Amino acid sequence: MTIFKFDYDGREETDEDRKARRKYLCKSKAESSEKNRKRAIVTGITGQDGSYLAELLLDKGYDVVGLKRRTSTENHERIEGIIENPRFSLEEVEIADTGSVYSAVERHQPDEVYNLAAQSHVKTSFDQPHYTIETNTVGVVNFLEAIRRFKPDAKFYQASTSEMFGKNYDTKFCTDDKKNPQEKFQDENTAFEPQSPYAAAKLASHHMVRIYRDGYGLHASCGILFNHESERRGEKFVTRKITKWIAGFKSWAEAQGLDTESRHFEFDKDYIHSRRSSYPKLRLGNIEAFRDWGHAEDYVNAMWLMLQQEKPDDYVIATGETYSVHDFMVHAFEYIDIPKEEITNFFMIDPEFYRPAEVEFLKGEPTKAETILGWERNVSFEQLVHRMLESDINAEKEKVQKELYTS
Ligand code: NAP
Ligand code: G4F
Image (cartoon, rainbow, N blue to C red):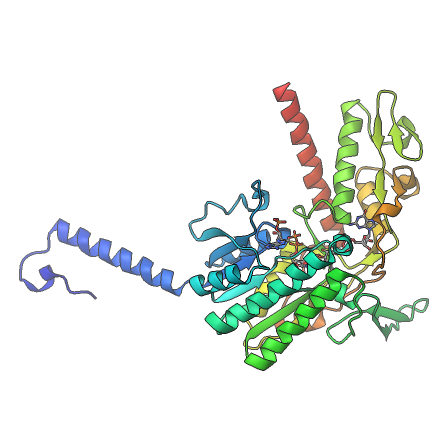
């Protein structure tokens, strides 16, 4: 214990002395726990995964530096809940800009870096291939180099993707289903065959991470994450596009005192008509594609677990179940009492949403992550669909309330 002057000058300890001792002890305790706190950099902080991961790390006692790119208007909706947290700070970094990445790593000396920033929309990558490579490949190399130069013991997580498998899958013999003896799946040993500039850019980064891990001994891991969605999913991804449309349609019907039953409406190619007005149909592309959909909250936990391992490695994170876009719609429409047989009334196929090349089938095999990381998912497919719908329906209700209040 610290010796104060009054500890050895022989006089009685006063209230003032006791106060001074308490103050000193509190301060030094705070300083030492601050020193022991882990510091993480999270890129893509304003995105779906960035926001969930930052919440998880703050809950675990980390200091979190969130990196966002410069935008002309603020886009902090997903991080509203953490922005005032004293252990959270926000900084502008363009990840394709080498200098700004080097500077962030050198100044913050992070224990862990989670690289989630990306041009993450597959269809957009066909329209903007160069920009996609700048962000999704050059950005990753910038971080690997920055860590190698300025903080070689920092642990690095790279957001790889099931899109890298592209057309490819493996098969295994499935004894309990005679009709479908060859079950298709992808795991860590499945060969990659990317089908988009997005997937090719991510695959290049995936290899760069391995090269820096093997060549320089960096603790760098890739999570090969299959699709994960949430209430915070971007509105251009198919699941959120569907749940948002359903919420909007339900609200439109209710505003006219109608429920969602087909008998209230007439349908043409593009619109749903009531007596009073019309609502545009949901427009989709390839609804026969299959995806392995989980909830983002479960998936960010896997990212953290990977960086807590002694050895870096790559892991598939998935549910092991697959559903088509059509299946997703069936579950979602059922939630507002529109039966499977009637959903064709409400959507139309629009070639605009087809991609030049498609990934038709994804179904991950997460056994390695379950065994080594002890990872498990908690949110089922049904719960995911319902949570997204509930959130969008509530948001529509709030919008209506606000409009009523302000009109
Ligand atoms: P998201 O919601 O689209 O978030 C992407 C984030 O990256 C956003 O914060 C975005 O900023 C930021 N960003 C984009 N370009 C940037 C740049 N040049 N410099 C700095 N920041 C930039 O994506 P997500 O679903 O959270 O996915 C997180 C990561 O996991 C991505 O790398 C994605 O490719 C990968 N991934 C996602 C899934 C999935 O199903 N969600 C599956 C496998 C892998 P703005 O907010 O300003 O746009
Ligand atoms: O929701 P999506 O755009 O997601 P996609 O292409 O699978 O990519 C997402 O998951 C990847 C992991 O596998 C991530 F790496 C990536 O960053 C992103 O998060 O499309 C899903 C499927 C596709 O087959 C697409 O063709 O839905 C089909 N689809 C049909 N109609 C549509 C639409 N996709 C979108 N976005 N919009 C449509 O109208």
